Image 1 (tube, helix red, strand yellow):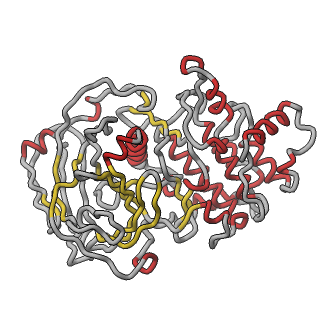
Image 2 (cartoon, one colour):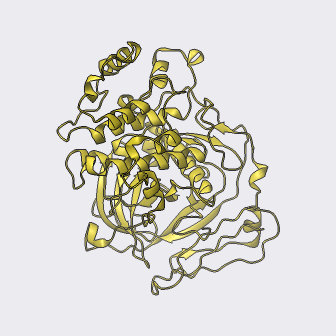
Image 3 (cartoon, helix red, strand yellow):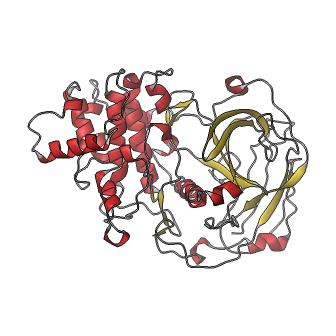
Length: 459
């Protein structure tokens, strides 16, 4: 089967046509045809040779499982590229940001050390999306490129895993629609969400305790989907748990993730240990990871996917505690030391911070905050936990699994603003590749369009 780069429908004039698609199909054989784009803003001037060159079987890559964080692939290659020219604005957007491709600037959402998050509008369908803008030169200077590359690799692994017939937690994990670049910047395009859990903790719109059971089920299912894609998140915290416009969870931000690199989606084995690196946010970090801080690299101990469930335990505490409590359970290092000392003592009395919790809620938090990772609760144990059982005999997990999956891309112009600035001008933007991106300042293979995303045809 040849690799085809195609664009079906999505004329900006006729929004009833089929959605835009960039279909990347991997296999062998000859290229039958070259497609002409119906998008007026995309130039698919591809030759038969360039398409044929892209027909690289995934099995030709190193099939052994490895992590980008632990070992950079030894293979050297000059992969073929497909350059797509999109219209882009020669003028900066009102925020001073240059908006790539056909997207229209709406407003800046957030600024941080990583770059800027902005709301943009896609022509044709008019979808309102989130675009993370990262400056290449700054990313290299600050040493941020490995994390950016790791995030793209994790999202690619998750997209491949979504090809499975049933990935229950997939709807609760953020998908990357595309990773793009131009001369100056990197761009990550994804769904625009309503808020994050940190905003909820601060009293924004949703009741945290009123939604705790549903959200904890969704996060647990999302973690199971992430782990089945060969990814350990390593930074589960309120800021990385986003809430959509219908009140459902999306787990995001894979910049500190550990991802297995293999020729096909490889689920993590809960009995195995995969990494010894110290990544994430300390107040949500599992003891087995924190213990490596004081050790030299050769003496560090490896850990597995259970680190994500410890972090979920910290989030569960914050969701279930009184609304007046805004501190993390282990906000200070001595808080964790006190908990570890209480655990070693034999636990004759409830841990002080959990005294006011009802028995099932307390049991849930403690099952996730079990110091021994081998005994720590995971998705399977949580599904049978009494905390999630309802009076009608149907567990909250079953309700979440059976309920209608949250629709993606719910944001509209009314959620952001009413005016948008249209773009004009042209410059090369996207480089599509099948390889994971390289960790160097050439940004090799960074460009990618999710074949199962809104611009893909593989569903």
